[in-house]
Amino acid sequence: MLTLKQIYDDKDGIIAGLEKKHFAGAQQAIEAVIALDQKRKNAQQKKDAASAEMNQISKSIGMLMAKKLQEEAEQAKAQTASLKEKIKTFETEMADAENQLTQALLQIPNIPYAIVPDGRGADDNLAVKAAGWNIPNELQQLGEENRPFDQDGNAVALKDWKEEWNPQPEFAKLPHWELAKKYNLIDFDLGVKISGAGFPVYIGQGARLQRALINFFLAEANQAGYTEIMPPTVVNSASGYGTGQLPDKEGQMYHCEVDDLYLIPTAEVPVTNLYRDEILDEAQLPIMNCAYTECFRREAGSYGKDVRGLNRLHEFSKIEIVRIDTPEHSDISHREMLLHVENLLRKLELPYRILRLCGGDMSFTSAICYDFEVYSEAQRRWLEVSSTSNFDTYQANRLHCRYRRQEDKKVALCHTLNGSALALPRIVAALLENNQTEEGIRIPKALVPFFGAEMIK
Image (cartoon, rainbow, N blue to C red):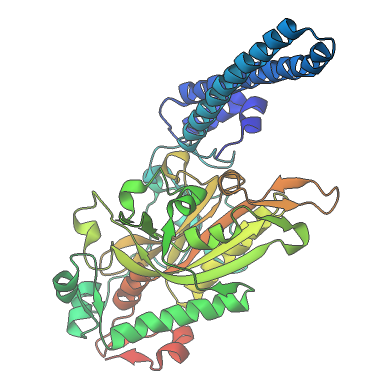
């Protein structure tokens, strides 16, 4: 949630940032916030003036009684009673204005950083690094392992992406849903029988591959210094509001109405909310947590070929990395998180590209976001497998997540960050499709110790 200080300090900049995100009615929304804040301040001033007057009159009552000025004392008592009623009215006005102000602020998205490109949708995202297959000439050198992800002078807008190298396979590659059936890895029909479309059943080597990936991702996160958390997979509405899923994505979350609890769409929600209403010591930061959970998304309105097989599910496994940091260090944290995700894809030997999202394609809460996509050889398309974001103080302000600075002992808002490291369904899809051979499906070398075999046969 934006702070009032941000709005008052840079009203025009805030409006321009909202327009960069293509937020409809940006100026009207900010003007409404300012008007509600002024309404709250006016009610506060009236209440303070009435309270001061009542206190002054109350002090005079004893003096009037001492002087036996009974009539004047009774008049003073009547005045204080009247002022008490006015104060109650002003307090109600203040509370109403405060509530309306909070609701108005909750409806306004975060402001994108200056480095975020302009654009309305996916075609305007910038590919800032790529490695593997189908890479345009100007991005070939960007796949070098020792090259920092953010040196993107040769970045390519996806609308200008021209795939230069697309090798013809030695045999016809099957899509993952056919491979899943051929090797008895995943049964989509059983999932429909038990729950409905979008709830696959993993069987035998398919289940083992899921477990291997989960353990591999957690082991890598642990080695990188993340503390593993095992959180609940249902949260209360305060948690949803804290990280920004509510009210923005209420229709996309599964809601248990009787208990007013929500199934989590990502471990970001419970793990970040560990620090709601907390004041942390600066020495504790950055806090680095990871969590494996099941994730639940209604995916309302998703149709067509993009939802086939594992491409879009209602329930799926994901490992999330979350950081709580200082404003001064959060950019470094973000880069470290991006390099961590990139390293996972390298170890899995998957072709990938890193996209800096444009303003119109970013989430409601992000200040800057990078997506990772892997290439699916049988489907001949790129699949998103991770979004890694810095939220600046936006989530922290909703969460009241603060830290005490060592230098001056003042309390300030933290920065929050998170990323998928990684989401399993599309990783599994790409692994199956890209590694299929006539003998079976090859398991990447880094995953073999976790899977227990070099091939799926």
